[in-house]
Structure formats: C-alpha cells, structure tokens
Length: 512
Image (cartoon, rainbow, N blue to C red):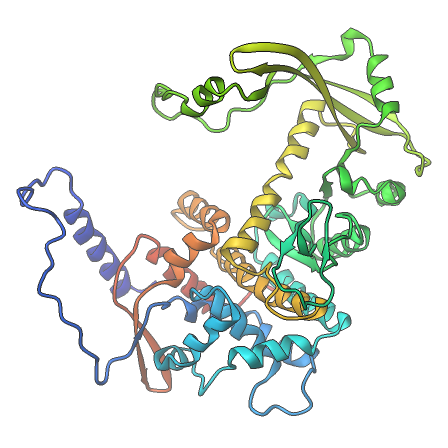
C-alpha cells in the first residue's frame, strides 16, 4: 500500500471517529437524521457502481489463472459468438458477489453500463443464455469444472504458512434443496415430505471451502457416493501438502466398508457417528463403572471483562405455563471400547457419550431418561473427550451449507434438470471460493503479523452477507484512461486497509 493511500485511509478513519465520538453531545437537541431538501439527478459523465470490490475478485481469478484454465479445459462451445466458457462461469459467480440472488438478477447487471465498464465487458450473458449454458453440461463436464476449481485452490494453498498443512479436516454432509417446481427432472420426495434435490457437499473445515458438490435426487440417502468423493478429497489434500487428513461425518456417513482401506493409508484418520444399535447398547451396559468419566464441555467463549447477569428466560416461562413436554440435559459421561463392524476386518475405537436426561411437563417432573451417542474412529491417541469435541465440531459444516443456501444462494434449483442444476450449484459455489481465496491470499508477515493473522481469520470465517457488505459493496467511480480501469472508491469502511493489502499481494508473484 503506497503512502498516499495509507494517508487517505487514516484521514477517513479519523473523520469517522470524530463523528462517532460519544463525548461530543453537540446538536443533541434535534434528531440526528435531519436531511429534508433532497433532490436526485443523473450524472452526465461520471459513472459509478455499488459493488466496487468486484474488480478485486476479478483480479483474484485472473491472478490465479482461473479464466484461462476454464477456457482450456471446458470446451463446451464449438464457436465463441460472443461468449467464452469463462465468461458464463464468472458472470454467474460475480452476480452473486455483487448482490444478486438468482439468475434473473443478471438482467440488472447487464443493463448497468458502469458494471460492464468495471469488468471491461462489452456485454454479458442474459439470464436465459446463462440457463442454456448450464444445460450444456454432462456429469463429466461438471467434474472437470470442479477439478479446475481445485487446481486453482492448490495454488492458493501453496501461499499458506507451514502450520496450515498440519491437518486437513474434511467434512461430508447432505442437505435438502426444496423446490416448488413440478417439471424439474430428477426431483423426488424425501422422508419428510419435501420435494427437491439432495446434494452432497464435501468441504474443507479449515477454510470452509467446498471441495466437491454432487447433486442427487431428493429421495437418495445422505451418504450415497460419499466414499468416492472422500477419496478424491484425500487425493487433493495430499497434493496440497497436508501431512494428516481427518474425515468426519454424522451417523449416515459411517462408511464401514471403507474404514479398513482408509486406516491402511497411514495418514488418514476418521471420526464418524455410528447408529446406536442394540449390540452397542449391550456393550455399553457391560462396561465397568470405572470406565466412565464426567464429560466437561468447553466454554463457548472467554469472558474478557466481568460476567453479565443473565436476563430472564422468557421462552422457558412460556414452556412451563403452557405445560409443554421438555427434555433437559443433566449430566454427560464418556467412555470407550473396542469394536469391529461387520464389514471390517480390523478393530476400531468407539467413544460413547451417555446423557442423563430429565423429562418434564410444565413444572412437573415426569421421569428420567438416558441416551447414548457413539463415534467410531481410528485415532487411538487423543483422549475420548477430544474425539467427542472433534465430532461435534463437524456441525460447523451445517453453517457452511446454510451459507450456500441463504447467503451465496448457490444451493438452489433455478434450471430444469438434475445435471443443469448441479452445474449451477458448482458454478455459483465459486462465489464462496473466491471469498475464501481472497482471505487466504492475505499475507501474515511483517511488523503487524498478529493483527494481520486475526484479520485474515476473521475474513475467512465471515458470513457471505457480511463479506459482501465489507469488501464488495464499496461505492466506486469507474474511470477509463491510460489503458487502465480505475476504481475510485467514494466511501470508507474499516476493512479498506485489509482490502488494499490484498491488492498489493495480487500485484506480487505467487509462490510456486
């Protein structure tokens, strides 16, 4: 970041700090929102866009060679009149980054002259053309596109410090994508009565990146096809340089037919939930009392000042008044034993959590109850408590999936066939990957290393809507001149210093 920009950012920060100063009470005799004489005009020469950060995302794609890789490895067109494959892919991803939520919002983007100028485009595909592009994909083409994204991902991983490669935590889960459309090929009804598709997502928990997305019919089980894509993710992480790999999934992902093979690999660990079958309950009942220990959960967060008094629990009072039946956790105990699944030739470690529960109705206690949760693993070193916590941490993937549903809006079904909707899910998911890559490319070295590391982690963990408002929605004037496209930012926010550090990093050569 050059000295001029650093001074401008500092000056903007000081100005906003003065306006937000709580000690300054001048003007409090009237409301703060005093604007009244408001007029609107249309600029004659100046052009600006709300999503000024979109240029940085395009620089990320160009710097990583993603544009060239898509055009080279995904030959869906015999002739380019006028669009290339990369134009379509990036067009859908940039639409979601710029605030769009569906294919129809492409029409707003393509009629925005400043947006076209910002990306150096004469025109971009309309919604109908984008939908037709998704229909061109075969299953092989979709997997090829995912491989292109993952090759690009490897370049980003190479820029990370050595500690990044200590362990890759790979999570797998399925989620229902509901649709009210009745003519969409491949939809079906699940056991909850929901119509739609049931995509599988394999993601890297370290960064939240979706490594593989597989669209399936709505009535397919969660684990179907998971072993194949777990294997592909393992291969990808090995190529990336990870020294150890951990697979995680809930009870639908036990994958007992593949546990021996993964254990033989040497560098693969797994922690899967396993169904509470009668034979496992029988083993639990035969455990001696000394095998059990009290499970103490970690605090959700550290209190940095003094603990605040908890407010009155309004929901709990309503539950008691209306005499709803409630199950409350009293205590948890943890133990372990050896177990060999039917499809395995090896013995593995099963960690069991015993929950003491109290069932009440209103203010009356009905009875005590117990439940057990089982986790199977080939990790013989970690204490049983850590195995439980590692399995519970997998629940963060549900947050990632929810981000793709309601934040990015990639897990939707805007087209009319199973394959075309699968293609859209993969292409739209690039918007989330670009967010992750932008965060991962931020450098951590220098005088402010700890501060930069915190900013990098915050940006990486940031939900999509917050990222869009902090990094993408930067009002900017678009200026063409001297064979350059200049984004002149018109407003300041606290993330702009980090934004300019990213731009500086993109101007440097990548570590090969």
